[in-house]
Length: 103
Image: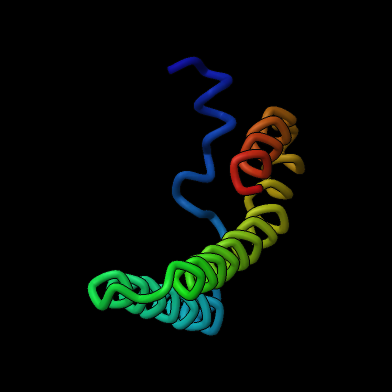
């Protein structure tokens, strides 16, 4: 791995710890998504109407997307900001790539 790539990926272990409340909130949100996915599986097993299943899939995708945006916001405020303060501008490219993947 190149030196530039190593610098850019220094957030692999987070310098700023997540607040307990944030962790708890994210875990609750993930548990709800897991529940939604299990519900979708049950709907398939029960041979439910396609439209109803698609609505539940859209809801699960939206919930997961919202979790991603919360983590992205935290990433920008902590990891990216810290790296920019250190002079590591390459972290901006990494952040842009993460945003592209998340959308």
